[in-house]
Amino acid sequence: MKDRSAGSLLVEIQPFLVITGRDILLLDTGLGFRNADGILQLHQNMIDHGINPMEVTKVLMSHLHKDHAGGVSVEDLMTGERSLSFPHATYYVSRKELEYALENDGKSYLAEEVNLLPKRDNVAFLEGSGTIDGYIHYEFSGGHCPYHQVFLIDDGEDKVFFGGDEAPQISMMKSRFVAKYDYDGKRTMELRQQYMERGKAEGWIFLFYHDTKLPTTTFQ
Image 1: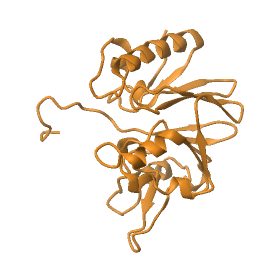
Image 2: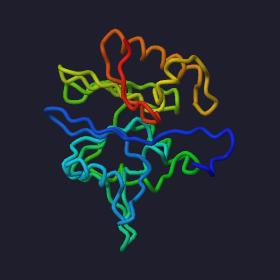
Image 3: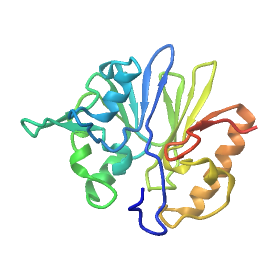
């Protein structure tokens, strides 16, 4: 913390696990860091809470920037080969976002983390907006990056909304500003307001991937 440069933006990196009566859902995959024992930190976090990472059934990706997609795959420390971090899950990824990520390998995207996706059978490619298994709704949003998508999980009891980097922190939901780091800052600002109003009306639980103090909340 003391080495942070002046004017830097402090954010949390926190994928979410949502357990329903049908699925164990992972929303985005973090940075892909390992702990001191060489175990993927994301796996260890699950194990620490009594959850077997191999039992995750669906991985829902808002987009493929490296801070969200670093844990999509994992490198074998002995062989250097990569495999999907959740081999028994179905990954749900925007088709156009993957194409864009592979074409723009570099600062925001790391192709090596996601280039397994088109080669595996347990990957479902999404386009536009629709529904998965009748209760997971996805919407093309395209504000933070060209092919960003958001998810609303509605199991009949709770409505859980994950907006990725278009609803990343509660402070950003409450203020109207255009961020220079967004692909379409004006659209992203408008989307935040729309999501907050819809969430108020329908009682959504919001999951904030980058919030340092309040990872979940509802708006009254």
